[in-house]
Length: 71
Image (cartoon, rainbow, N blue to C red):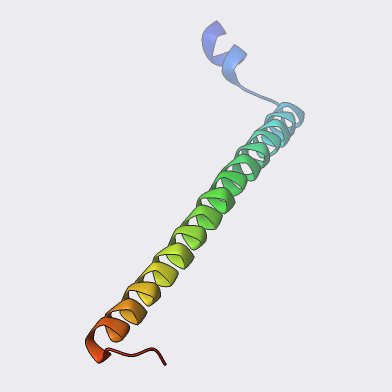
């Protein structure tokens, strides 16, 4: 085996350490991603609620205009 190949061979302990670091980094990334997605979801619910209320108001106004009287 050449010297380069010998240096690239990792022991089980080194692999376990690298795996632990990888898992920790990925967990932090997913935590950040989940927070961002939660924020986007809250904004979308707010927009949907506003849209539904606005459309309801328009329908109510049209009903008043076309019926000529208030409920």
